[in-house]
Length: 231
Image 1 (cartoon, rainbow, N blue to C red):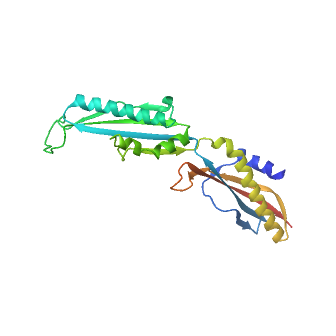
Image 2: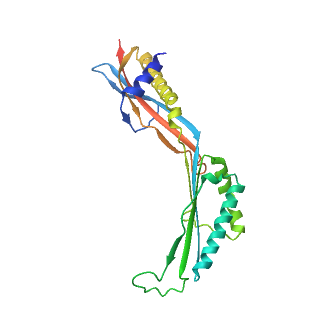
Image 3: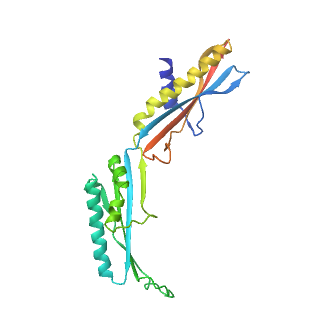
């Protein structure tokens, strides 16, 4: 089909533009009898990778006791993740970070807070997006065990990494939409749609569908096609 050929032209011969707009007429030139139209393609996809940073900390005067407490907490978090379907190979642990308020060169801190603070981060990076989502919603299970996560560093991100697999189809769809808009204009103006004069493809954008479902992504691309109009 002609629009498939046009999609190939756009995909391999053009430069990128980042403004996404609705399908329709972009501009008309009376002097050269051309029309520029735009075609939009949008697709909702599920994230295929999740990254969860789980940080916890404890404070006290005895460093050895804090180390043992941190180790027990780490083991409890690992059990929690395993119970919720997270594979051990997707769990990464960083060394414990120790802060000693008396270790500075100049110590003026008269705060009565404990001398030591030990924090540790466990990172989950996995394609098991559903398992992470379910585990995130069960964090209160850790609270029941007396484990408090550091909310400032307890972050979850969802990504879609399969863009290349859906690019061709979306380019075809956007190009077809652009051609349909051009054909409609040509019909309304009693003209005949001619060959492509030039075309360009906008950048693909990937955004969260909304704040409540960050694991659902909205992928969007716009193509711009300039056609000749024949009398």
